[in-house]
Length: 230
Image (cartoon, rainbow, N blue to C red; front, top):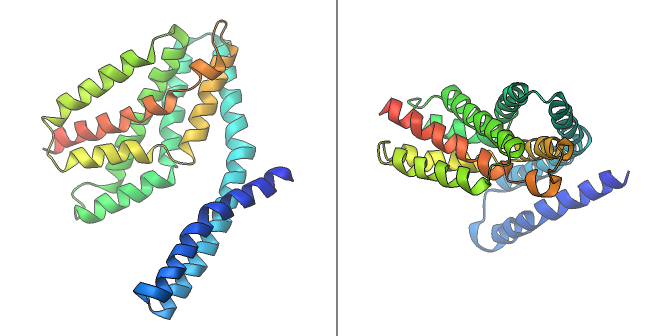
């Protein structure tokens, strides 16, 4: 019951400021048609209800399951299995990420279908999945995160030189949208679960950093997609 109250308060605090600002602008500067303004208020209410249900679902289901899966995979002590399911889970949770679908739809519309929505979603999902797998390998083998970040961004700068200019901003936006409300909690819980079981690992130190690494994957995959399209 406390979780429900906290979630409702959190969502109201998130949506209320933008609603108030737009309401003030409506009656001072912009004067939208009344029908449009009412649609905005109805939409804000529906978004609030949706976010409440969404966040409750994440807290009740996604976080515990992600942590338990990470713990169970670590207990198998089978590196290939951890890598396989890291890639698989990172990919499928990204496909379900609402932010990724919004970006892919916008890119598809702006490019007049030249950059397909489906192709972009799959490229971003695969990029996240591969780097989630690498992130779990980092935890297992105690690889410093700075090495992977430096190598990843170095490769990004190299690929950017061979990619059409239109793909560069899309790639960095793709890296940003993967840090959405569905992907982040699940991937973080997965990493914490893996780190909490391994001897000599700290869940607070080794379990974090997955999102930073996971966001590299879609940048690289979209840049590679640009090289292919180019």
